[in-house]
Amino acid sequence: MALLGRTANGLFWMFRYIERAENMARLVDAGTRISMTNLAAETDEWESILVASGVADIYREKYGEIDEAKVIDFMIRDQDNPSSIRSSIDTARMNGRMVRTALTREVWEAVNDSYMTIKAALVSPVTSRSLPRILDLVKTRCAYIRGTFFGTMLRNEIFDFCRLGAYLERADNTARILDVKYWLLLPEHSSVGSALDNFQWVSILRSVSAHRSYAWEYDANYNGPDIIDFLMLNKRMPRSLGHCYNMMREAMSYLDQDVETRNPCVQRITQIHDRLSNVTVRQVLDNGLHEFLESFIIENNNVAGEIAKHYRFYPDLLPANQSETQSQTQQQTTDAGSMQTQSG
Image (cartoon, rainbow, N blue to C red; front, side, top):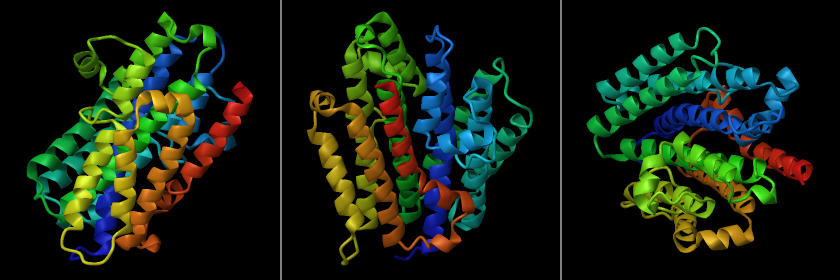
């Protein structure tokens, strides 16, 4: 590799954290939308958001009981949460500074300006009234960085490492959002297919900005299986698992084209891509969607480990919260298992 492992590491993680900042905004958006359908006093949707994002233990250690306002602040502003929006945008900028000479001036300025704008917006606690504006600001700023990146960067190995980080993180988030609805917030059997159930699915679509594109693809017939198919397997949907792995396979093919040594990352990404291409939504549902998503999250995290190992992303150079978040997937699956026992 002509690109140093340290530089590749910075690019990969910069775009993982930019994507993570946006994804945290989408998770909070999903929780807020679904909580509107909760007529009881329980806070299941917010506990599920914490579990899905892999930070439930950190929250419980700091706050104890689940409280909607505290969860929202923890997910957005709390720097004790390594995956909060504030922590993510901080770490993205830190990585961007480390690899500044590998970026165009426009990309670096977009990252730096977005960091300052988001930081200023999060000085004060987020209220229920300001929450929609803050979430929209984060999503808009991340889209601004992404647009600048695609509009100005040379299509070389720098570009491909950035794409690998972004799409790997995006696939992880889509799987977690689906798991929030289908497993942790699964309504009683009598409610499946009801107006409430369908409303919650539509809320998930809106949280990932896919409401209108779903209507184009499925003639506005809103039901759980089609929405799962759209967000998991439909490669024309830019946040689906299938699309993310299609893009990762493409990026890896460019990185690997002139290399003679065997690259285990290519094989692992291709295996996951082919599985997503050949499975049907009915097969996934028959075997258990939660189990499929749980397995996918673990495999996706293993892909990140393979990439770091093969391209020599030296662990001693990772920022502290990068190292911490690499171990969160296992905690997430453990928490999800305990939630399964409790809800059963």
